[in-house]
Image (cartoon, rainbow, N blue to C red; front, side, top):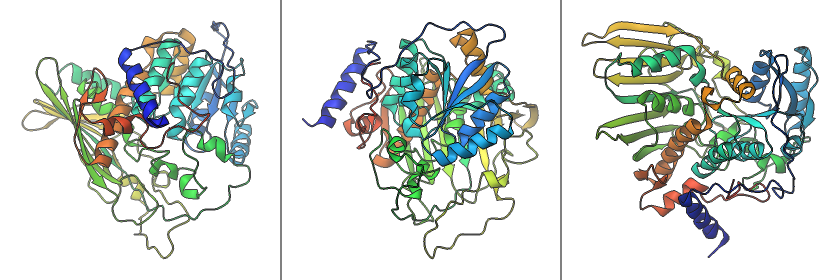
Length: 487
């Protein structure tokens, strides 16, 4: 029996047992984490937050915490010193207090003055950083998806429970006032009995081309960037942003933009884990380094205790598409459609000799990002993070509508201060369930078959290959960046 097979069996038996043994804090990657007594926040105290990963979404974290009077960005951490320098200069322009700086996340966790971490690294680091934060006695905001595979997501949810930490998932629509109102309208029966939800992720994604192996750029700590993933030669297509499209580090667009819509679709249906998942798709149009599909269709079936069924359909499209239910259209309302420059993915270097279809100046506004819920009395569309509209009756007459945003980071900070997990808008347990749907879709796509899922054991029935991929595929974990078997 090889190391990988033994690890897989140990994981399966551990999860079946439901054990909640608390591992000692010493010995994880050679670092001893020192916990401290639970801090009681006074009226004027500010939560000391460390933002981890500053290249893209991470700096949005900095900007959001800067708006919250009860929070302070006390530290930042990034393995690319070039990015760190740029962001520190931007923080200085914002007149924010100079934060402590770290390259190695483990060193950050040793700092007892840090109350919480806010993780916006590539996906393959999310769960491990969250688990380590819990073990170090720190609360955590974990970007979506909270896991790179199902198993480590389950371990993160366990760690939050074991160490009694506040852990928020970065599915921002959970804090959107209009979205929350829309979900409540569904619960109240506005559109009748809801039987179907459709998640839409239609986002312009250009080719990433092909990138040659090159030396690691100065200032980049590539070993720390790689972390739990296998060490591969450096290319720009395995690094900033394009890591989303490589299986070792990303989950494709269903786990990038799509997890937001997947989470809202499952939330609106009022379901947890599915009993069946079936996906089909491919990588169309481009000949490049991308490994994940840019077109994907998946269907999930949910069997309810009362004998009824619900269906969740999800689509990823990467190029020209139509709008549906006005989603993505300026007439819908709401401010969830970013400017064109934020949506058109034009990384370099491009494949030699490749011709790219021309994108017009309004290309970014053609994104269709949202959800549609169908009931026996009407349907509801949600436009991204902050708006909903309804059409009711046989004649589809316009019904209630709203457009109001919210702040997932402010909700997290409020809960860190109150220590009340029940007030979290996006608790990690919900994030784990929605991320599991992403993982089931990708495994079904990669294996080319339907998966029958047992929600009680969180295992695929009669399919060891699928269960192996849900643990960590063929990748494994690279020492010493290993998600612990027991938390």
